[in-house]
Image 1 (tube, rainbow, N blue to C red):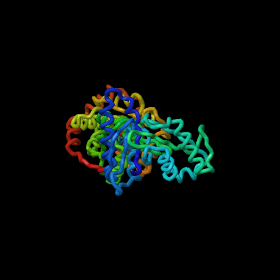
Image 2: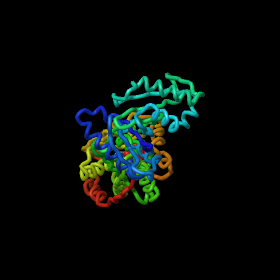
Image 3: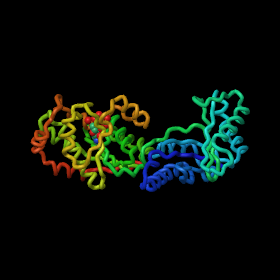
Image 4: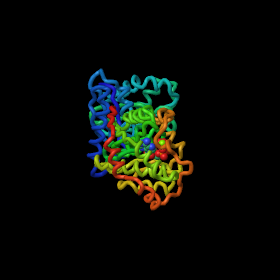
Length: 390
Ligand code: ATP
Ligand code: MG
């Protein structure tokens, strides 16, 4: 028998009639993710997904890390299977958890018995295994309330599994179960986090980036592609649409009053995102906007912005503080790239006094000076598509 990864299902188990399809999606996402780490058999039983190496060439450490980044998995542990008998369970716990048992000062055993024909009850099993481990590691104190180490035994249909503490999984719902959204990806801290948050709820992402050469550099674009790459362990492979935005920005500067520059530019971003979404049959648009963060993110400005899109605009960061966003950015691994100092199209032509309480009729009137449809059509036609592999 070989060491195995156990993934505990999260919210998936709360799905009534839909549970099957959620679980199937989770299994196929897990399979795809661990296939990079070797040959694994992935199957589910009793609210747990088993990720079993098929041969000795499997990289279990890498597979374990990969499983922790699959949405829909609440907790992950590494476990050693053994024969369903007390002596085998004791022996396995002693050898498999030797390091942890030697390092800890207190412990307890928690047993679960899915196989009700097993001769000991869960409590008896915990007591007997606890006694044997205490004998083998006499320095250990038994502490059932706040132990340093919990030894878990699960007696399942085909084997008993012994493991130490589980670590948190990514949580959320399996990717692909929440529809598809176009996500507006800039090089900042916020938009990768916003994208990740929607992916966590099962939404497949279609990133779109607006690029304004020569005002924004090739390095700024590379930074965005790098952020997309950093999202792939969570979101799977991505295809980034890079939309040329220079002509639109220059035209706005030429024909609109300065205090409306940012707002009109953001309305164009919405229109182009909507056009991309229409092509893909996507259900929503995601942005990293956060209430009050900048002038274009007041209630009034958000309303004027989203008026240009027909689909719902999802802003998962809307009520978060910067500090909370930064903490998430660090956790998901995008922070260090986000703070690299490259310009974004939002930071060129910024008005000295942007409107913070714009009116929709004013914005529409200002826009009348532009050939909106032709500008959008040319930007769409000039797109570059960049595939980002997992
Ligand atoms: P971020 O940190 O994500 O860049 P921000 O606080 O800097 O956000 P803005 O620059 O006003 O805020 O942008 C708000 C949102 O608009 C971003 O979170 C992103 O979703 C979208 N956005 C901004 N610039 C671009 C761009 N060049 N390409 C695609 N989306 C963009
Ligand atoms: Mg930005």
